[in-house]
Every structure is written in C-alpha cells, then in structure tokens.
Image (cartoon, rainbow, N blue to C red; front, side, top):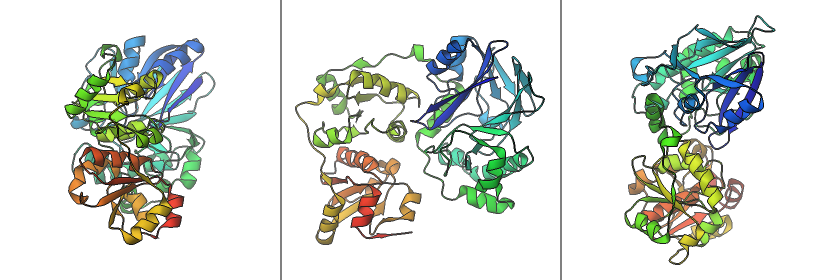
Length: 467
C-alpha cells in the first residue's frame, strides 16, 4: 500500500492518495478542485486513479471529485447517509456509487470500509483502511472533518452558514455518539484528518498532519467528556465565525461544481476596463502587499494581500458569487495563482486581472499608525478603535474601549461604526485590519487609519482587558 498526503495551506485542507502497487490502482480521498497534484503523483508512482471519494458535502472548498473522475474515468463513492436535505444532487450519474455505514470496496489489495460519523454534518462518513496483502486488521482511518488532531469537527455550520436553524445541538449530540463509537476502536489505528490548524471547521485543530486514535483518547478534549450534555456545551462554545462562503460551498458541492475546462480564462484588462468595473460598483480586490496598497491604490478597491495563505478565506467572506470580480495582481504569474486559489472556493465569475501599471495615476494612500502613536492619540482625541478579530479573540484580550466587529461582518454592521469620527482598525497583526480599513474607505468613510502592529506591540502600548 502507498499513501500520499496533500495539503493546501490556503484552506488548511488535507487530501490523500492511497495506491496499491500490486495492481496499479489508486483511490483519492477528499480531493481539491485543482486535481493536477493527484494526477502528477499517480503518474510518478505508476498508478491509475480508479476510485475517488469524499467524507461529506464540503463547506470550505470546492470538491474535486467530479473533476478528477472526469479526467481519469474513476468511479466516485459518495455518502448515502444523513437526511433528505443533505443527499447529493448528482448521485444518479452512472459513475457514482452511493455508500452507507458498513459498506466495503477494494482498491487492488486495499480494503476500504465506510463508517458513518455524523455530527459535523448528517451525511459525514469516514474510511477505515486495511492493507489485505499483509494484514487482516485495519491500519488507520481517514476521518475527514469528524476527528482532527486535538479536536473534533464543529456541528454548527449547517445553522451558522447554511441557515438551517435548530441543527447545531442535534449535530453536537450526533458528534458525541460518533466519538463514543471511536472510543471502542483499537488505540493503534492511525488517524488521517481532513484539516489542520487554521481551518474554521473546528476551534482548536492541531498542526500535526496525523495522529493515532490512542493519542487522541488521551489528550483530545472530546474524548475526556463522558456526559453528553457537557460535551454539547463544550463543543458549541467558542467556535469561530463561519465564513459566509461556506453556505455557497454546500450548494455547489451538493449539486456538483462546474468542470474547470468549461470556465473562461480571466482576461488581462486595461486601466479603462478596470475603471469601468469600479464605476459600476463591482468588487475590485487588490492583492498586492500591504505596504504597496497603503502607499498608493485606486479609490474603491479592497486590499486583501496575497502574501498571506489566508487570503482565499477572506475573499470568501466578501465576494458575491453572482457578481463579477476584478483582481489587481502583483505579477502575471501571481494572477494565475490567485485565480487558482479563488476557484478553489468557487469564485468563477472573474472578469479579469490587471497588473500594477494599471493602478498608476489617480491613487490614494491608506494611513497607518503605530501602537505607540495610537496610545498618545487615544488620550487626547476622540477615536473609535475597531477590533476586527473574531469574538473569541476579542474576549481573551482586547484594547480597552475597543468595539468588536469581526472582519466578515463589517459591511453588515456599518450602522454600528460612527462615520463622523476617526476610525482606527486593528487585529492581531495588521492584516485583517487593513482589509477592514479598505472596506470602510470603499463604503465612504473618510477618516480611517490602520493600526499596523501585532498583538504583542499593541498589548504592550495600550491598556487591555478581558471579557
């Protein structure tokens, strides 16, 4: 048996290729939309991708199962568990096989057994793997978004992102029973999760790529709580804000995303075409560095520097999926990478891109302030300090008097942000706060300053409090 691990840092998302050297067959689990890495890995190992599967209807990225099957002719194995609202819409396709708890299939000498693990979502399944060529017991489990290193998947996404009110407590109780089922499995089993640290699918994911079930039983909080009600309270408390694009991903992955070869390539636009997009009120995102945007940018553009692996998630908070998007990229090569990243979350309506020469001319700057300077001004001037971190971060420690509006909700809560005061945006590093500052400027706020400082700096220079 051969195991290959793939990891997308932008989405903190893991996927896997399991191959059988004896027969040359391979299975890919939870593939991303860009299937090139799997094709290249299979070719390098002399394998054919014959099977594709996924643990659930994903909410945080576009599944590559259909894309990979279209390019390889592989069969797709999809969950037939859960209620009617979360069945796959394209399950009637001839290459799709629906599976339920206890079902098995072979990939050469590798046996794959389905375990229904509801909680994160009702249809969620995991895959127990046995290399029958040399063993009669399983080696490990691909747990998707059920079990992570140090955490379990959040059960509230259907309610928070998809608007299905009243589902999070039910999901939490299902998650409890899934954990109890795994309590009875052997400690030696390896655990290969679907996400790592930084994913919004849990609240405390570890950074290690894999673990063992025995280790998780010892140190994962989910395995330490035997009372179901206490487990539910623990699991629902402190979950991060669910990015708005999660609801769109659920829809896309349920019905099946468009194949990439059917999408138009974004055009290289001129300055006049860029200005037309701005004049029409369309979203124009500037992916250049924080420093470049702060020094000079076109009015009405939004700063989301591609220098951070998290830029894709922040685009997902802000983009309208039925509207055109124009991007400003630092280089033509970067534009290609940015488009690939945006398509990983289904942003397919990209009008085109422009390069830095198109933003020359009519530009404005975004004022920046240091923590020390803010401490001086805060004593004498009437400032609104806007903390755009998540609620949990804010409650742990924040600048005294700061107002908390998480970045993804800034445009929804403009009524709470005075436009007749100078607004200083801040976060844990200056990255999210610059995005927020550019959003406020686009919304017509004239006096906006970004606190370009990390948490160590502002906590040392300004009075802070908890709660």
